[in-house]
Amino acid sequence: MELVVALGLIVLKVAFLIAILLLLPLPLTWLERKIAGHIQQRMGPMRVGWHGLLQPVADGIKLLTKEDHIPAEADRFLFKLAPILALTPPFVVFVAIPFGESISVLGADITLHVSNTNVALLFVFAVIGIEVYGVIFGGWAANSKYAVLGSLRTCAQMISYEIPMGFAVIGVVMLAQSMSLLDIVRAQTDVWNIVYQPVGFFVFFVAGLAEAQRIPFDLSEAEGDLGAGFHTEYSGIRFAFFMVSEYAIVLLVSVLVVILFFGGWNGVLIPLPPLLWFVLKVAFFVYVFIWFRFTFPRYRYDQLMAIGWKVLLPLSMANIIITGVLLGAVAAP
Image (tube, rainbow, N blue to C red; front, side):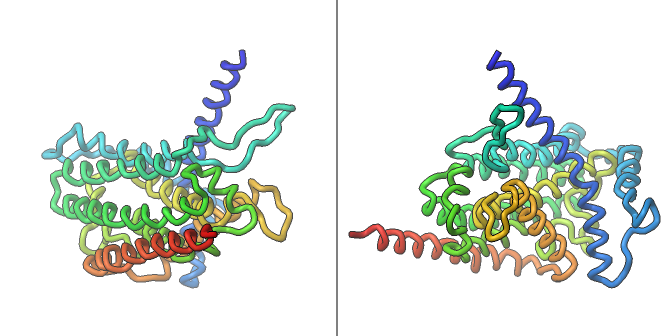
């Protein structure tokens, strides 16, 4: 009976996560347009529903009912597979993400994570790297010059920025002596890692912007010269998969920033419930993603690659060396 209850809880947690991630673009697209409107001194969506609240619903209906077009010369199998490969990794990663300690419901302790593994951080980076296949397949299978150029750009960008992003978290792992995300948060009970790892945070956040392909690193789309990049030839529900994937990665990077550098669900000064602290911190970084989109211009491609290889990579390696030296000095008798 206990096994049945445990399996039932896992199924409920997974179903809840999938529902949240699939519905995520609805509020985020509305918020993004509203924030953009206020930044640019205009109203944003106002026509569909009160203050445009139903605009995302209208957009969703449009995408679901739009013609599912496949180019005549496309590789049909890979063309259909690419959106699934792009969407699946961000969803799978959330299985290893903790949202808090256990809570008591009707006398039973329920953990706020699906799986707690001692190599959760490694699992996150390993799985999220699979998304690059969805990008390259989507561009190549469409048999379109714009799409191929967009997929090649995105592939190079994602691979280039995954390296400093991975190095940036090594300092955090050294401080916590663990790759478990739960242990990393517990190690920040007194002092958040942003105090000890400001350089690691900077590298991780900038690399996260590039991984999510958000301005100023949205060279994969570059509307002015590529149309829409690797998903130029996609429409309808397949295009919606790519859009949901983008927002899922924005949420994932925000969650990881909070867990790795800002104490996770650990609060400060104001006595709020831990889960509320966690949600507020993640919401702040999601807002920062949106704010950046309507604040900074897009980099040229040579600038983008130079930042990744000539700035972020040396900074991340220097951060590892300095952290190791300081930890050795503290541990020395």
